[in-house]
Image (tube, rainbow, N blue to C red; front, side, top):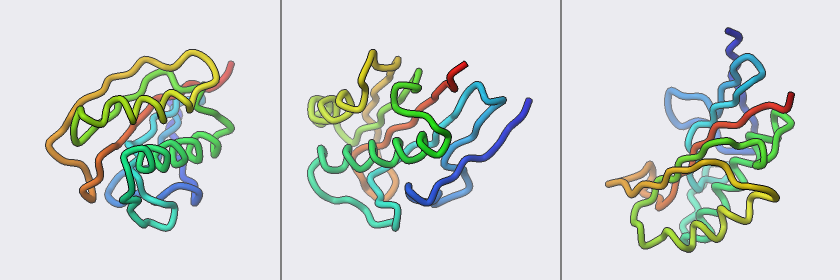
Length: 128
């Protein structure tokens, strides 16, 4: 198995002992959860839509580092501070895809890093 760490300066650096993403055998890309941080490390504290848009931009940047797009995602997990954000997050999240969206789970959690309201992680596949 060939395992390679993927990193880009176009998304926020990891704030703990983890990688932005890990490529496995040029088959799968496992992306760590992205929160609404700018690439410079500032927390986006606006509306849930603004927070989600920053998360989407971070995800796109990590994918782009590998020549991928959101359409390469096959599974995502969305973590929310409250299910009250579900509809607004769905609106921004859904606009990320030009085709069929990936499989997904959405859960409400007791807390997220830096007190944000949304985090999204994903698994992508490389084109054959």
